[in-house]
Image 1 (cartoon, helix red, strand yellow):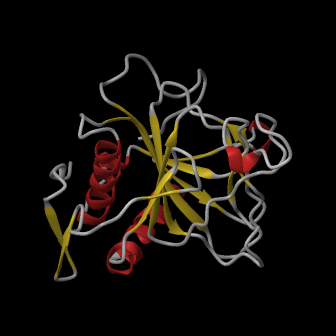
Image 2 (tube, one colour):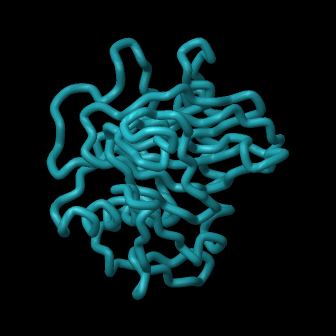
Image 3 (cartoon, one colour):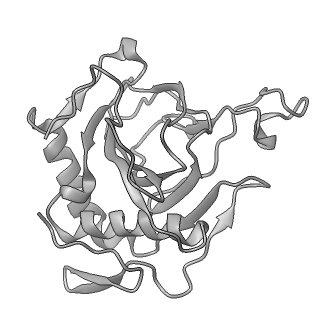
Amino acid sequence: MPNPVLDPNDSVTIDGHGLTVWPQGQKLQKWFDTNVLVTAFTDHATYAPALTAQVLERAADRALGQAYAPELGVGSAKVYDLEKWPGPAAALVHARALALFRLATGNRPAVADLSWASVYDAGDYCMPHSHPRTMGSVLYALDLGDGADQADGRFCFADPRMAPCCQEEPGYMSTPGAPPLSPGMMMLFPGQAVHFVTPYRGKRPRITISWNLNHAAKAGNPLPEGVIRPG
């Protein structure tokens, strides 16, 4: 098991570069007037190749990766429990997700109820859903692939509680809201927020990493009954 990297001031060394969990001056921005927060890590390219290779290797291993049937509405491969993966790149992004949650919630404790990487191949998508048992969810854009246009594999909110999704009348969801994402961006949003991913049509895998976070551990299984959690 890798050494834990938890404090925002901790650092890891990757290819000779010392990378701090929460770099000095790292800024958070709101997406419109919502409680969705985004931040971009400028050192993403330093560790992204190693982390991408690790995700793809684990997703291809039947003992570690989980491929979901499209009729379940989750058309992408999943690899769970990022905090248990070996290597400094996985430890770094996991610590950054925890730091983002702590920073946004007044520096209170952060505990991952579930963490996973999603690998979207051509035709994969994710139906609208929210994250039960979760105070805050984090999404990290590792590689958004090579879709033909920006609508390919787009992460969208479809929630009547979010003004950007209700352009015709407040409280009535009429227009999916898509925060602008680019590789290296990390986003925090409420677990109750309804969201989805449009069908992806690119050739290179689209890869994101997600966390469901709370201030304290939750009892029970974070996955629905019958869903296998490899590894």
